[in-house]
Image 1 (cartoon, helix red, strand yellow):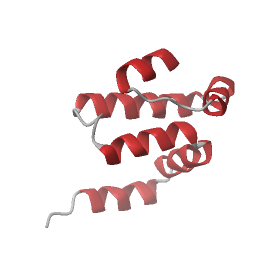
Image 2 (cartoon, helix red, strand yellow):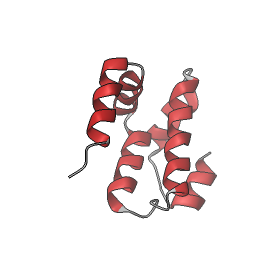
Image 3 (cartoon, helix red, strand yellow):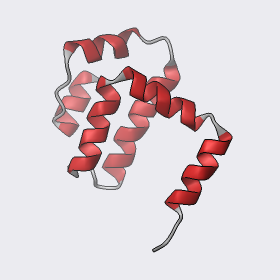
Image 4 (tube, helix red, strand yellow):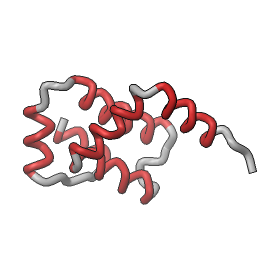
Length: 89
């Protein structure tokens, strides 16, 4: 995964980041990281700074990723996020 991330996204992570990713026993965390990579690639936003910053933060900050996964499992939070995301100006 490290070679893919570096080659495709030119994202260099700390050794500590790769260690927690390698040692995690939670496959959902890895799935969410991979989903972020796929979404950014599919939507051609992998070079948009705000998205690359978020992507890197998700890989480097396990607590942030855990919080994202927690929100994903919370139906009320997801409804609120969906409502915000679907608002039009």
